Length: 432
Image 1 (tube, rainbow, N blue to C red):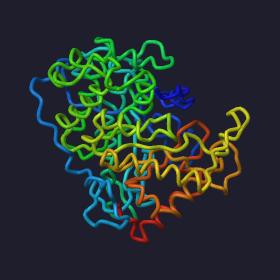
Image 2: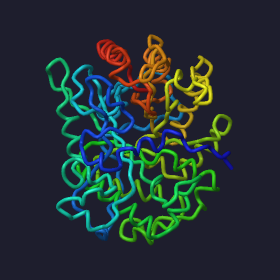
Image 3: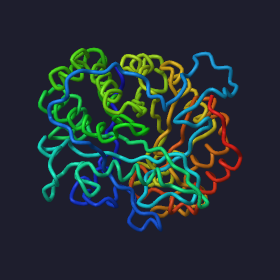
Image 4: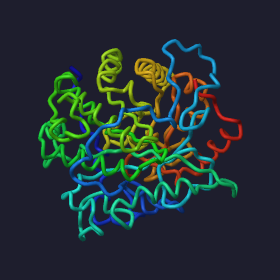
C-alpha cells in the first residue's frame, strides 16, 4: 500500500477565490495582486443548463479526436510526424490563465483551476442568477456557469505579434477535496462513498461538461484524489457509490474508485465529445514502485483517457528553502531529472498516452529570493533539454504559480516569455 502523503500546503490556497471574490471574473487565487501588468488568474468554470437528474442513455465513449496518437510501448526515440497532441506536432508550451489575452509570447495553451464545493442546490443549474455569497464555482463569470465561455473566448482570441494565435484551455477539475464537510486526511475518499455527496459532485461535473459542449478543451481530473484513494487500498475495491449517484450515466460502472474514474471519463465522452481528458498522476510511492502505479492507472481507466498530468514542485526552490517552509531543497540535479523523465516515460508507455506537466514553478536564478521573486531552475532546465523532455513522451509543459509568494510569469523578469519565443522561433521540438 502506498505510504501516506501529507496534504499539500498550497492545496486550499487555490480555493481562496471560492467565496465572494469568485464572483468576479478577475478574482485571483494564488496570483499576487501586485504581480505586474497581468491580472490574477481567476478560479472557476462551466455549464449549459443541466438538471439534477441526468438524461437517460449513455453514448459509447470515443476518444477525443483532438487529442493525440497513442504512445508506443517500444518507441524508437525518433520523431514521428504522425504524433500530434491537441492539433500540434511539437511539445506545447502553456501557462496559467490570466485576466488579459497573452499577447507577449506564442503560448499554445493556458490552464484554469476549478476549485470549490459542488452547487449547494440543483436549482442553481437553471437559475438566472446566484444568491449573494454563494460558495460555488458556477457563480463566477458574470452569469451562472459563465466562466467557461469567458475563458474559452479569451483563449480563442489570443494573439501574437498582432496576428491570431488561439490557445487551448486546460481545466484543472479540483472539486473532491472540498466535497467532505470536514477536510482531513483522505476525507474525500470516504465522502465519495456517500450517495448524497457523490450525487452533488457528479451533477456538478455533468453541468461543467455540458458548458464545454463541443469545445476542444482539456480536462485534468482531480489532483491528489487518486493518491489518497491508493493509500486506502486497491482502486478496484475501495468503495464508491457510483451507480446510485449517476444511474443514467454510469449504471454499468463498478462501485469502486476505479469505477468512479471510468465514470468521469465516460461522462466526458458523452457530454463534451471533443474534449481531451486526463487523470492527474498522483503516485506518492514513487520512486521505487512505478509498476504498481502504472497498474493502478490502467485499472482507473487511463488507457481510455487521452493523457496523464504530471508535476514537479508546487513552489519555487528559493521559497521551499526558507526555514518556515521546512528548508526543503527543491533544486533538481541532472540525476533527479533523469529519474523523473524515466518515470513519466514508463507511465506514458504503460497507459499508451502522453504526459502533460502542470504548474511548473517559474523562478529563475536571476531572482533575489523575495516574495514573488524566488529562485528556481525548472524553466531554464526544461527549455534547454527539450529533446529529453519529448523523448519521455511529454506533450506539454504548463508553467504557473502553485503557491502564494512564488514567482509568476509577470514577476520573473520576462524569462518565460523569452524562452517561449525562442522555442517557437526554433520551430519547436517534435513529439515522440
